[in-house]
Image (tube, rainbow, N blue to C red; front, side):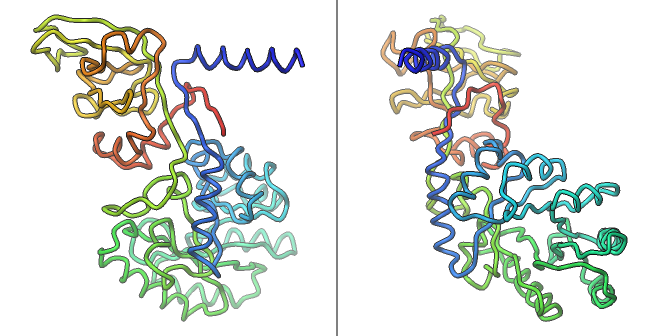
Length: 376
């Protein structure tokens, strides 16, 4: 019992001394997955865990989702798949969205990783390895349906039909594509891509479809296919712009105050004196900056919160610190070591992204490892 008590006291002391705490609610993450799975039924929901599960820790996120029924996991890079594969049971499928760089094929086959084939060249390399090994290898075929980023081009589909008829030892698990404007339900591109995907499905009717991303799930069942690939929605980000976010928040970020001071009217604040006070002002400097994923573009635009009160950022965001105007708070409310809310009940990922002139994906994936992570 003494050891448990000492460990608890030690953890509390560590939490009290850190400059920033990133709280990750794994229960909320699971509820988001279950909500998306219910919306998709009878189709299935995969989990996109690329970029270290959008910065939240794929080694914690993926096993938790597996425990609640997820069996399909998508990463972007082969190195991500190598790191994730040992964390999951053998019946979990790990897919590499960018396919394989030349030379990775042997390790991919050895470790049971599944490439998403984006070109005829990738298919030929994977097929050649399967032939050399004398066994069938799984793959997903991705088609470009109008995004011009990754996938087999429309003019490649005739040659692909021929390749698939030559006994090339490839087991195609899905045909897939990626929606470019699914976060905007009014975009005509959604319908255009669906029509193109329907042509793909007609040409390759023997393979199930993997189509919808987070936004695509909310476009309706004609976009779902057999397997959908939610990403940002799992982590609490809004899947559709201009609509109420149906997902639960997963992250909270609180940053410690380094210093509090009162400055007179006319005081210059931060680099290049981009802010000059117009009256006596109480300021606080907090221990995070653009090196911690809080963009420099928040300078003079963004804010943090304390007790539900908005505290604007004044001057430029620095690499490791940000200055905020705390004049709206009672004197003495914030002191050295106090924490302010950057993400939480008063400020969502979308709010912070809007003020930074970017998207929630960039904010979430940019939260660096200098924060102490607390998984709940």
